[in-house]
Length: 125
Image (cartoon, rainbow, N blue to C red):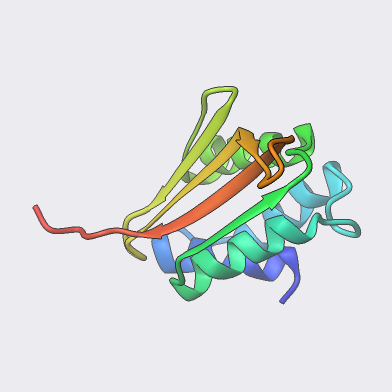
């Protein structure tokens, strides 16, 4: 599944407002040149969210384009994203999924990297 389709699927599963979202998502991705080149880790992470699968991954860096897209999804579409610099969190309550993207992770050999974690959460009150 391509990035626009994944974002649209996640949006439709979590939010009621879906009018004209597809074209707005496409415009957003185009403005950050993510309509053609997307980091593999980002697709893997979103696929896990969309499929409700726990998953972790490590990768070299979070580009400013990815961080900006997530913040715009929060501002324009009501996604629950919080970028605290070293950590980005996102919550998808209807899917019972939380995401953490760390800019301060370590590889097994001790070298700095970034990581993501997709977690299934309980919605019990």
